[in-house]
Image 1 (cartoon, rainbow, N blue to C red):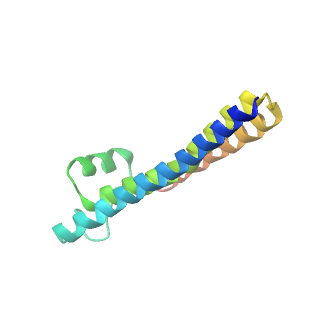
Image 2: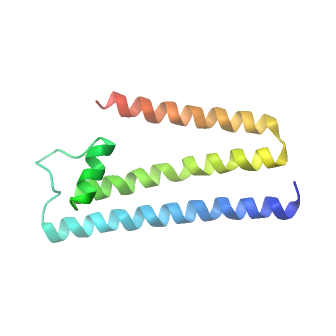
Image 3: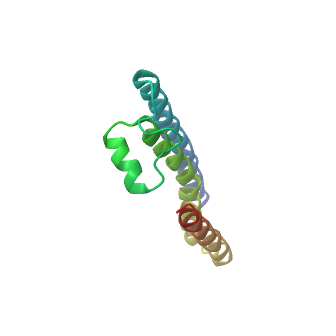
Length: 121
């Protein structure tokens, strides 16, 4: 891989991280503003949406807790996207050892996220 291509990929990774953090913070701040305006979280006391369907339904209904959960989900998704782009970068470099290692990291992240999702239900 040429040095210019590697710089482009590093810039892409940096942009993904910046945009992911900024978007998630904006979404969470929107949820906080909604909570301040509505005076409640949109759900009964000590309950909040825990499934993707409930989060997206709540976002459509502009429920503050659902919007904040979406922001948290986007924040969690940001480093996962970074790992995916790293796999692409290592493939372009033909560095198959790091492709394998990064793919294992991605699989571990996916298993942890799926396990955490089902452990909560």
